[in-house]
Length: 532
Image (cartoon, rainbow, N blue to C red; front, side, top):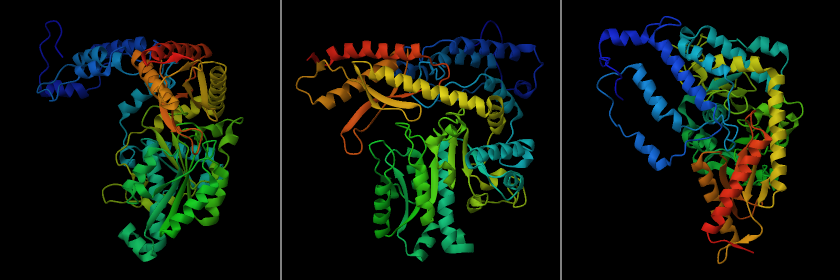
């Protein structure tokens, strides 16, 4: 990065460095002009419907080759110029109405201003001494989300919302950390049930005293990869995250769950937890949460719901029946950047019992003392930004009815997209939407691939199609692979579409299919297909 005009270079001097931390004059000065310039650049970029710049990754990577930190500082203006020239134009426009391939979508523009305020205030919610009002705002926000899921009486929230020893929920950096913490609570609950006040001796001692070989966690074959991370980190082992078969609707099969638990017990494993999924990542389906909840309750097994994608559906009167039984869960995960339309880095773990998080509490002498309000006492993470500033704002600005409108609209748009696919001769709907996610594939019936296995040829065709569409940057859908039909069919590559952007319209979906048809027809010839 070079300097402009005849301005002397920046120097590592006290005056220069102090100026970086000094509050600038409002509406004046160089920093205000830079903010305006950057804001205008971002507005121009976000106004486009293209998903990404047309540059291959092999070329893009060549822009970032500097491996050492510069000895001398640079002016903020120089860095802003670099970002506008070499970073912003080549990132992914996740807010584009044609970006329908992942659970990352548009966020409301008011969050840009609020995020600036959050960063400026720079609160650290690990302890009340660095957050004060943010601590109570976070506790209130988590109580609101707890009420959304569990709907306890008013007296319950008056008692527990700001009670120092109660934890209705934990805000964290995302669904992965939330899932890990939920199973951490469950694991330590088991340790305490065996060791009592000696629970600091840990898992191995608890297993030896209980006569169990290890613990086991059960989740459908559609479970999120964060659960494997959790089993690994908690010392349970990835092999003891036991995959339960799904039925032909991609939902956990209760009968297979029963058989899996019996088999695990016969091997000396203790069934620690069952995870129900409210909106699987690959297909958007919801496990039979009510049946799982009742089944776990009878056996005193921790019932955890990964509601990162679909938990927010409880705000829709029309669709909340899809997640019936979520209120039976001992713990529930929500992910803010999905259907709560919050920025990255906002996840929530909600706990039915306000005392459950006591199982993971830690204290020190300088912060997170036993008598304090410090949120970090019952948290995996230490220092954390005050994202409740954004979460609470979004919940208030949208309101339940606002979220309901968004959810209902996304559901209907996804159903419309499914109809468009089904009515097209060259596409095949693979999984119909339950929540606002579907899978399909390019499958031109009038073409064949001589000398090739049909399924392998179709898989190759759809992988190539998805890659080409991604590289061209006009629109985006993702892809995945699973057994079709479930549970015993062959591995099938499918295109995966997530309808979450409130600005996505029918004509955008028509454009995406038209682009796929054009690319697909060209690929048929390149890959040696012939008309039947």
